[in-house]
Length: 154
Image (cartoon, rainbow, N blue to C red):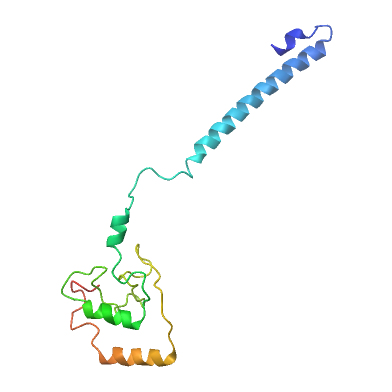
């Protein structure tokens, strides 16, 4: 013990030694408890070891052929020409002019707020191009005669 080397002539010094010993013991216990609490809370910042992990292959299935390209009107028309309303909706088979709550799909047919939505790269647009696009959309049946809720529609 720390206090054995002290002489008992001065009783106060002897008692003070025991107080110091108790405080250092409490201090060690407090530090140990603090380290354990920090170690336990560190798991809150560690990645979860359970749950669903998506692989690169699974992610690749959720993006279409126009992913990463400029999503301008010409690209939308190309996607529209390939769209088959009788086939199931996929990232390669969707109506690019279809809207959901006023939102247009990205270049893979995903809408904002969805799991796989990516903000598309948009081309430059001026008033003349917007007028041409509006005229084309008004003169074209963008549903291809498909009823709402068909296989290739929302």
